[in-house]
Image (cartoon, rainbow over all chains, first blue to last red; front, side):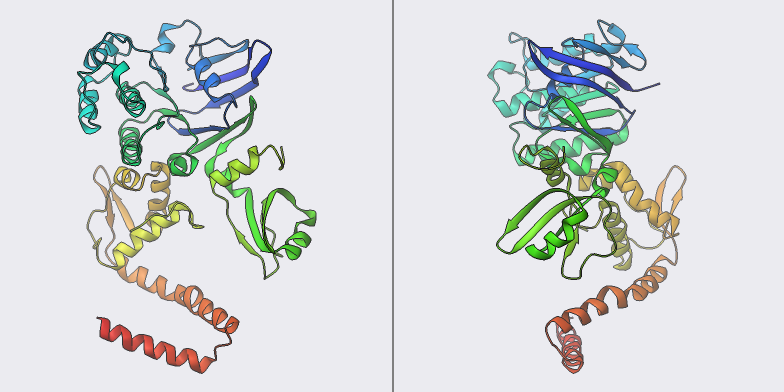
Length: 287
Length: 127
C-alpha cells in the first residue's frame, strides 16, 4: 500500500516527551496540513518520518517498509526545512548537480529554471544567502526532487508576499502535473488553507485531529448576537470559546447547527485558523 | 471571477458560480473550452480537488461536458438553462432580502416601488 504509516511513535528528549504514542496514516497523493503551536512536535514528527532522528519507541512504515536505515525508502521522501544541511564549500549550482546522486529523479534543469524565476544566483554559496533566500534555495530543491513524498516544514519562512504567492502556485502546478503526497507545516494557516485537502492538528505531542478540511470545519459554527440571548442559547451546547465586545458576544460551538436558532442571533461558519486557535488555546476550550 | 477564501460560501461553490457568471456574461461562450482544473487550481491557489468538485456540479447539471482527452466545454443551450435557473432563484435571493431589510427600516411597499423605478432609470443613464 502506498502511504506513510506512523505506528505508536513516542519520542523523548531527555525527560521531555515530544511525541506521545502517535499513530496516523498519510494517504497517497493528497496535500496535508500539519498544524500545531510552537513546540507541539511537528518538526520532531517530520524528522522521525524522514529518518533523521530515531523514535524512542514505535515505528514508521513507508509503502509498507520500515524506514530505519533503509536506502529504498529514504530516496522516496524529502524533508525541506530552514536548516542548511548542504556543504558550505559548494556553489548552489554544484549542489544541484550532486542532488541526482541521492535523488535519481532530481530535475536539474527545472531547479535552474526556478532559480531564475526566484532570482536566486546559483553561483553563490548557501552560507552567503539571506534567511529568505535560504528558504527559497531549500524550496527549489523540494520542488525539483520529484520524490513521491514531500515534507515541507515551514516552507515560506522569511519569504516576502510575492515569493509566497509564487511558491503556492508553482507547488499546485507541480502537484497537478505529477501528484505526490505533500505534508506542509506552517503557522500561516489563513494563507495556505485553500491548498489543503486533509488536516492534522497536533498539540503537546498528541494528535488531536486528522480528517478532511471540509469534514473538520463542518463540525463547528459560530453564533453571535447580544450577550444575554447568547448565554441562554449556549446552555445545552458544547462551547469551544467565546469573545465579548461590549454587549455583543460571539461563541464558537461544537455540533451541528440546530433548527431553533433565535432570529436575533447570527450563525456563520468557522475558518481553519479561527478553529485552530480555539482548539489549541490553553486558557479555555474543549481539549 | 474572484474567490474569497474567507467567505461563508464554500470555495467549490464559488468556482461553480464563477463559471456560471462567466457563461452568462458571454466570457465563456457555448461550445468553447473552459480553463483546465490545473489552471483554476493554480490561478486561485486552491487544491485541485476543490476545483474539480466545483466543475463537477456543472457537469452533473449538463452545463459543462467533458471531451475525452481534450478538456471541459460549455454545453450548447447552457446560457438559457442558467438564465432560467437564476430567474427562479431571483425571488428568494433578492426579493426576500429586499423585503426583510425594508421591514427593518420601516420602508413602505410604495417607497420600494418608487426606488425600483428610480433604479431602472439610473441604469438607463449608465448604459
